[in-house]
Length: 448
Image (tube, rainbow, N blue to C red; front, side):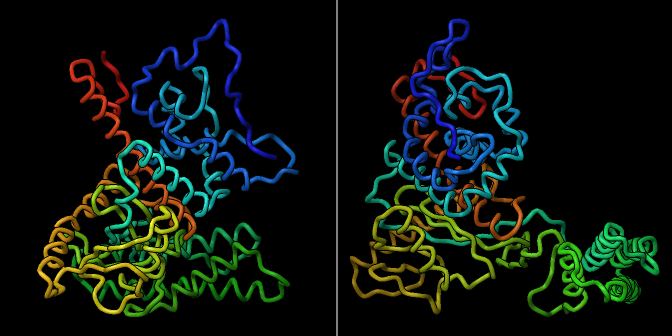
C-alpha cells in the first residue's frame, strides 16, 4: 500500500486557523520547505512500498522524510524530536501539516522502521534533494561541484571503552541469559565469581599490579570457556540451535580466540562491526567505530557526498569510491580533488580528475599558484566535519549494524546541508530587512 498523500487544497475548518495564517512566511524553515521538491520525493520513495500490501496506510512521505531532516538538522534523538514536533508550528508546517496538531504524528520507533525501509539508497536520495535545494536557494552553484575536497574521519559507535574484563563478563552474562531462556541447566553459572574477578582486574590495573591483573583475567577467561563448553555439551543432541544462541556462542568463541596483536578483534558484543581506528590524534589515540569519507565543494562549504568505509581501508584506496558517490549525487564531472597527505602513495585513478596533494612539485608557475590557492581551501573540510560532529550527530552513532553506519553518515551530511541553507536564508532576510529581522531560528523565536 502506498503512503498517504495529503490534499494540496484541503477544505478550511471554521474552528481552526491554518498554519500559514498564524506563522511568519519569512521564517527560514518555511522558505526551505518551498525549496525542497516534495513531489519528486513522493515519486522516488513510492518504490519502497508494495501496491498490494494490506493494513493501515503508511504515513505521508513528506512527514516521515521531514522528521528525518529535522532530526539531523537540530541533532535530536527520535524521542526528543517527536516531543518537540508537537510544540513547534514551524516544524509541523515543514512536515506538510495544514493545521496545528496537538498529538504526536507517530511513535518514535516508526522512524527506525522507516530508516530500515529506505536503506542507504533512500538516504542517498534525501541527500541529493538537499543538494538540489541548495542550488535552488543559490547557496551553491553547479559549477562549484566540479572542484571538491575529500577527507576521511571516524564515526564512533555508541559503545563503552573495550577492556578484556568487561567483554569476558558481558559475554558470560549473555550466555547465561540465553541458557535460561532456552531451558539449558548449566553446571555452574559463574556470574557471581566472574563479576568479582572483573572488579579485581580493574583495581589491579589501576594500581599497576599487572601480574595480578593478568591472573584475574586468565581466571575470568577460563570461566567463560567453561560456560561455552557446558552449553555445547548440553546441546549436542539438538537438531538445530536457536539463532540467538548461535550468535552468542560465535561471539564468545571469537572473544576467546582473539590475541592482543591479532586482527579482526571484537570490541563490543552488541556492535561487533565496530573497529579500532587510529588517526594520530594527540587527545584520542584510538577511536572505536567506522571510517567515513566526506566530500565537500572547494569554493562553497557544502557537503556533496558522505559514505561509510568498513574495514578501515587506506585513504588513497577510497578516493575513487568517494568521487564516484559525488558524481552520482551531483551529476557533474569531477575536475579537481584536493586531499591531504594521507592520500599519498597508491590510489585508484579517477578519469579526468586532477588530484592535488600538499608537497607536490610543479615547474609551471601558473599551475603552482593555482594549486597553492586550492590548498589554502583544503582545511575548510576539517571545519565542516567538526560541525557535523558538534552541531550534528556524527560524533556518535546509535544505529545498529553496518547498515546503520551507512544510513547515519548520509543523514548527518543531509542535516549539515540543511543547516547551511537555513543560515543562508537567515542572512538573506537579515540583509534585506536589517531593522526588522531579529530572528534566531535555532531557538525558534520570532520578534518583529
